[in-house]
Structures are given as structure tokens and as C-alpha cells.
Length: 343
Image (cartoon, rainbow, N blue to C red; front, side):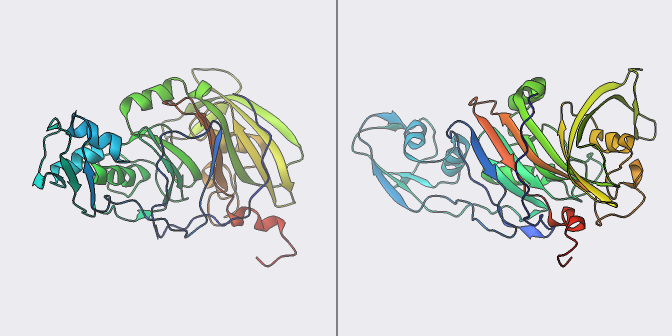
């Protein structure tokens, strides 16, 4: 994984866990090297609904589905849903067959019908969506995924509901996870083959994974690298060792951005992505993540875990395009270093 130079810190607020309007743009191809930033908190963009009533006159023979795909800015599944709901008329009559034969001169009309709205997203904002992937900002406090027996609201369940509004057969697939109390950018797949492609080539596909960590104490090193082997105990806690011992190799790079007596602010880049990797390595460094009682924190910190997934950059599995997503650093991470400003 290639390391990138750190972008400057943003002082935007983080996201609250109250319901938020869906904020996203669907796209299938953008210029190479696209960069996307999270919207400002409370910004609202309305999702698109079914096209307003329109009429088309057929010029060349074609099947109905093929014709609609070339004339409507809708996905194949969305158009199939419109056909199933009886929204497509040919010469004034409802037609539901995908392969209905169109002839020159036929008139196609689309009945406007507002599609079902997905419930407001809780602790989640969609940054980008296309036919293959969804990229989101997740709030601290929201689980990425839960077991079938657990009925808690999760990012996964909310996004599953979101995609099924367009078509009931649509699904969401987990690519990676963020801990419940870690906020920031997450990537989900919309097809199983995309999930597999991303997971199988994760280290080559991901160009940058940058976190911001608020840690306890004053970090003296300006930068450094921590390498160890992580292994999970029976109590589900991760332990670090300098020896393999059947553990997974973990490599974490860090750079100190701010350092005071009580707290330091670090930029952290992952070369590997192990469970609780940053939290374990910060404890090993002697500067546990603020608020992380599980891994050695002594104070409550800022009232949440001081860990934020700021940047995720990767090669799109379908288009080969390099895409970069950034979520602003929560203001609470910066307050310990703003002594002369109101807190």
C-alpha cells in the first residue's frame, strides 16, 4: 500500500445520530481520480423519484426493455419495477412484458408514480452510490453489522432497506467493518461478485486508508511505524505480540499532528486491516485511544472513542477508476488543542 501525504485537517462537525436525509449521487462513470467529500451536517438532498409523465415516439423496431434502457436514466432493475407496477403504456395500454415488440410510430407513455421512500437513515449518510458500490459516512455509536439474532439498528440493515426500495431483490454485501464507536468512511458492495473482487484484492485495490486518532498523553515521536502480530483471546480482546504465534501480522504507520500534555492527535495509516488494529497498537505505543477503556484508556476523553476513518481511496472494481472519499474530522477531536477558543 502506498502512503499518501496527509491532507489538511477539516474542522467540520461530525454527524449526529439523529435521522438524516439521504444524501448521495448515483453515477456509473466519472473522470479518473474522482474525489468525494462528505456533505455538511444536516445538508439535505432529495432522492430521485420516477420520471415525470413523458411520451416517446418509437423510431426503430426494438424490444420494450431495451428501448427504455436507452431512453431513461434508470437502472435495469428500476425499469423492470416500473413495468411491474404498470407505469409503462404503449399506445395507451399498460404493457408489462420486457420483450414486447415495438414498431416505428408506436407511442410510449410513462405514468408518474412516486416510488416508496426509504426510512430516514440513522447515524449514516450516503456519500456515493452506483450499481456496484455504496460509500457511506458512519457515526460513532452505530454498529456496522450485527448477527441475525440481534435486532439492533446497523449500517448494513439500513442500507439493505435503502436498496430494496428500488427493487426487492437488491442486496448489500459487507466489504470491511468499522468498530461501533469509530466514525468515518465505509464501503459496501451491491453485488456478491463485487464484494469478492474487493475482498480478494483488498491490499492492491485500496490506495489509502487514513484515520485520525485522538490519544492520551503527549506523543514524543513525530512519526513512526508499529509492527506486531495480533491474536484474539477467548474474551474477544485482541493482543499484540512481536512473535507470530499463529497471529496476524499488523502494520500501522502514524504521524503526530498535535501534541499536548493530556492528548495528542495522530494521523494513522493502515498497511494491514486487522480487528481493533489501531486501538491495540496505540495501547502498545503507550498512548491509548481516548475513551478506549478496553485498550488501556484512563479517562473518558471527549465522550466517545477518539478514532475517525477520515479517508478511503480505492480502485473501483467495475470501472478501474481511482476514487477517494473523505469525511471531515469531528470538532471534538480538535478541542483539546484549542485552549484559547471556547470549548
